[in-house]
Length: 266
Ligand SMILES: [Zn+2]
Image 1 (cartoon, rainbow, N blue to C red):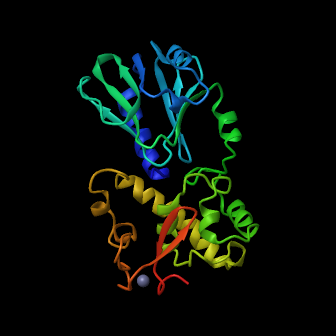
Image 2: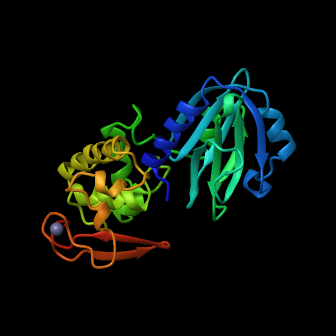
Image 3: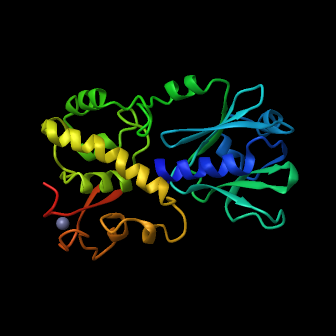
């Protein structure tokens, strides 16, 4: 499931492959991914236009079209952005394809169709309308605001971390990783955390997400490139804590399965 680090990697792909290039052709293979926007309108906005900026906010990717608004991409549960060279061989389950001049192709893939490709005239208004809190790697993600938000919720700390209105970008996998590295029980109440725990949590969010981006989140063999201290490679049946080797416990909530160490976190 694409979370902030994965989307940041997609942003870099978009920047490297598409920036400064004109979009020669747009193809939409399943128009449901566009929501209320028509294929015709979508194509008209993009065809012959140049991408001039790639921006990420939380789990959203936004691409500025020269002299106009922004293409918006959300990846839902199974979405990805994949470059490819051979126009005859687009990746499976692609829903939208951008063909750039000079032969670059970018495919928005989404097997399960949860996610959205859209358009906005104003990136700031889009972010406000999505009700997103500060981006987890953004400058506005300050400790003071984070502390206020966390102490204002009585829910378990994991679901508050995953609440995009509190902080944008964290989902099930990285919430587990962050809580593991901050040694906090995912079931603890958000407003019951000690100041030192909050401080550690805030710092760990930045550290974990930056490390995941730097190690190429979502890429092939990603787990092998992570530091040995990461929980992520152990998130499976029979997985053991990388620190104390205890059997990990699972936690089901809201359709997700979470993992934590019953010895290290609490
Ligand atoms: Zn442990």
